Length: 227
Image (cartoon, rainbow, N blue to C red):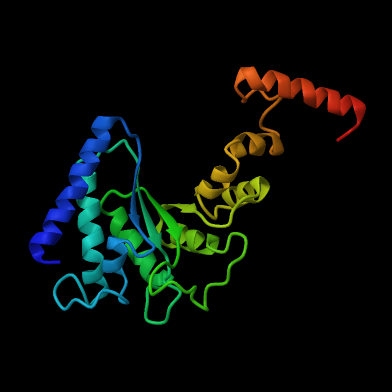
């Protein structure tokens, strides 16, 4: 990308934020992870530039900072702005969490309110050998960024158990939990979670046309001792 290309794309981010506001959106998340353009600038693996946009950590971070600045200039101060980062590339010579913490601090200085802490997604189709998949395997990154960059974080990836998610929030490991694929699988996940966490009495949170019937069924099941 030439200097003009970069300026044009940064301006386009700002214009998109302005359209989002006009369309009635209340939150923006910039996707700067998983090999997308902002991540390509941030990571030393694809970024081989020798100008002010590459090389040092500060130079590689410059594009993300400029994007944040352009978006915040066109986004109301009262509305949240989040950045999704790959906290580590899981590859030798790539981004490590210490660098992401510094990036989070720089983004906070530009008005970013939250870091959505994902990982990986660059360097090829194969899963890096350092990436060990397990329930909540990316949570430690959200916890570190939250503590050391003093910014709100979102934990994401292989999180599905409501009680476990609640424990993460109560323990201060993150401020929000992302559950996109779990909710794709079960669109009623939030309602089931509310019941599991004793936050919904008698299916009161459900739409009345279905909640009433579910409440009646639950009472009958309890009375019969079926479950």
